[in-house]
Length: 186
Image (cartoon, rainbow, N blue to C red; front, side, top):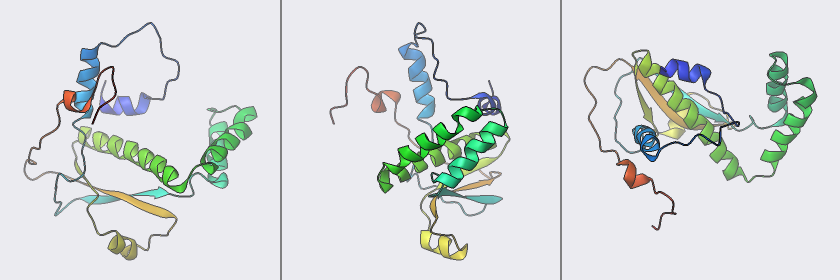
């Protein structure tokens, strides 16, 4: 399946067959591929790009009006039965109201990270090259673009066509970041 097909067809599936087992070899192969994901401090310096996306976390995305809007859209599009709408709104808003601000930002960061990785994979499949960046002057960015306090700047993603091959960097072997059947000791 292509990246595009995966992104279009992938959904969180809570109904998984308990009789189907994944082998350690297959899981290791998947983990090894995931281990190729970009990480901070690889020191990719971006000098030029066709565009740079500013990825922002909306601190109000979890508040009642936006949660209501999302669920109303889901009802209109047939993804959520009308009778469950209020229950879903209450569950979502209630879940986040009980959390500390740092935990909420962690969840928003996770959502942003999933989006960013999907964007970069989709761009690569379409022939574009990307580079995620966290080492930028946040204050200058916020000032230049008048970014409201409502939004947390999380990362930038440069997109363009490469003019030379990127430098290769070390990635941990799957056995260096996965422990099997036990908790890590250090």
